[in-house]
Amino acid sequence: MQNNTKAKLKEKSLAFFFSEGISLKTWRDAGIIDREVALYNELSKRFKRIYFFTYGEKEDLKFQSYLADNITIVPKKYISRNLLYSLMLPFIHRKILRDVEILKTNQMYGAWSAVLTKLIYRKKLIIRTGYVLSINFAKEKPRNRIKKRIIKFIEMLSYKAADGIITTSQTNFGYVKKNYKPTGIHVLIPNYVQTEVFKPLNSIREKNSICFIGRLTKQKNLLALLEALKALPYSLSIIGSGQQEEQLKDLANKNGVKVNFLGNISNHELPKILNQHEIFILPSLWEGMPKTLLEAMACAMPVIGTRINGTKEVIEHGRNGILCNADSNSIREAIINLMEDEAMKKRLGENARKTIVENYSLDYLADKELKLMEGLL
Image (cartoon, rainbow, N blue to C red; front, side, top):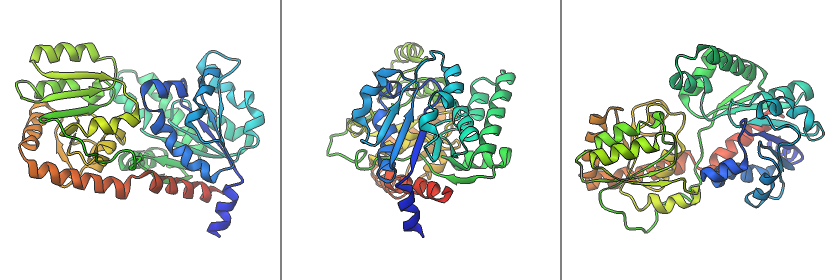
């Protein structure tokens, strides 16, 4: 029966809906295109065709070289405004969407395009989110109650329409189950790592070096990290960009902290950089399922993360990483204790790699997603 279902899947097509306003160029400019397309290159081996509905215009077509031959880029056309285009997308691309069997979203923002397509053409719909939009929005803009209600309404409609649901963390899984009571098949599939790319290398790690990768925003709690490093003999490499960059540079200078701001770097260049550092740190105030943490652990790095949902699902304190609180004193203590214990660094790094290979590899999680899709048929 299972082999017969797999054979049927090979005859089917998948429509993948990008988040509103996001394009392949967006992914390329952020340095994450290799990572983001890896899953679909893997899934393409089992589908007749996969369609990428992006918010880039014709310039997105030049990124075809990143994709398998049976993945087709469908760029935005006719309408310049992203919101209006997202509502009209099911009609503009009706010739394609009538013939696909499965629809899948990337995040909740813009998922309404897929929901409308499901309602119009009666296709199977998978709502996938890397994070719960209503949770993140409430943390970032707690006073904007009207937009929060709109977001929760969008989530409610999306989960009600979904035949399949993918959440990436146990916390998010429980939140969706409790608040929306979806009737579709609901599975927990965490973010994946290309473990053949992110792995230990024979590199010399710079002594007393720390690495962070992520957006330079309030969520990542980098101001507390720079306070924690004040007067310590450690250097910090920050990879990423964001609205706090200038503020962080000013604080680093004020506190005398040696910080290298490296900007956005291509995802496949990160293993080399990670392997040049002694420790990876993610001091966030909140997370969904942090990809950069998983990738650092895959490189057998000893990691420090804050004791928050998402991060604490991955890090088992004292076995494959260190958990601390989000205040600067707790972060400081965790860094010092780990830096001064060579045996612990080695043990945590080895266990971190083992955790990722066994539970977060691309092949393993792609297979879980395919089983969900097979189940919908």
